[in-house]
Length: 304
Ligand SMILES: [Zn+2]
Figure 1 (cartoon, rainbow, N blue to C red):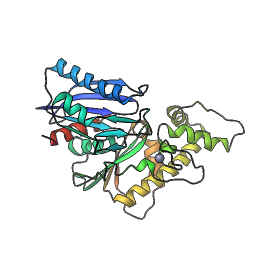
Figure 2: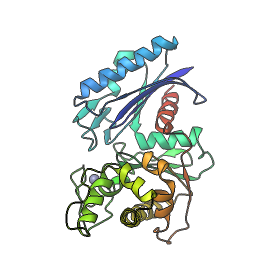
Figure 3: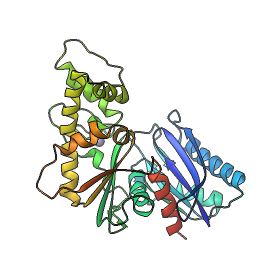
């Protein structure tokens, strides 16, 4: 038996046909960063699932969707995501109607935590926090395998926790001082600019992206290393709040920023964590960016 799994992010849309063991039988992905209409995104999802079904000859029995948040599970939609260009994307109802099979949806971090629990290195965790540093920052929390959802499906949106009142950087959600505004893929360049303007008279490198900034630090440039220390303090505040809120025994870190720069991002931030509670184990995801897709497949199997 197989299900269709969808991972809708701010940049990429990934779909796969997955079996119960988490084997991805067929996979496809496309860039959606330029799309501004929810209808367009939904019809692209339908086309991609249809193409995979045709290619493999497999009819999925359910669909699992992992999506950038926030979501409204009552209407089965993505609503006003700060990292996506369209206002509302209705998914569950229209997809159920189109394919005639059950659809389950959840935010990408919740799906990621399920992916790690079922197919990654988190099976034995009593309380797991799956933390992703990507275009945005978010978490999924599992207590002995049971997902913390919240009233509308938006629990543990930790990227919008307050971590700073010095720079007061604006967040995509409309708030200020939120973790995501400093330390996500989109936040790091803005934070670097604000931080370096205090040290250098002219605006140094306004067009550098997160990868270029972290690469410069990795190459040993003192200005960028110093910036990464400041970034680690911000990350340490976020991580401390997560540990205080959920008391996890395991944190699995995912997202390209964490996966590609483990020493600079993950190791450095642990040096700034409060010691109020015992430190949990911290690991980098070994699922190569597929944890949300695999988690979506697990949610789809749960619907059967
Ligand atoms: Zn925010």
